[in-house]
Image (cartoon, rainbow, N blue to C red; front, side, top):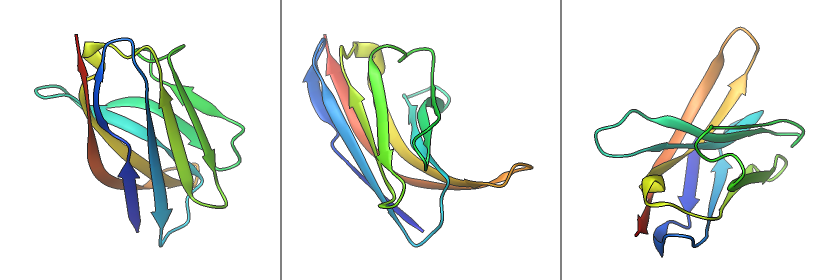
Length: 117
């Protein structure tokens, strides 16, 4: 399984970025994004079901970030608006086959997002 993320970069506070991730080699029913800042635990950003019918957002990004995706193409996007310096982190693409009692989880390489004040 491979998850290829792109779209990170440097942006000023208040700006926007869009992350993309394409998966291959596996079957997923959930895709999404997590992030990890230096010295902090990895945290949920957002996830979406393959059907696109159900999304979950971390409290820190609600109202500013929007997740979307195409299950058939194994792609997921994260539109990040009104970025804040505290959004600075490595963002990891995530995919999973959730079978109810558990899940098989897959992770991509991180893409760095840096927000300057």
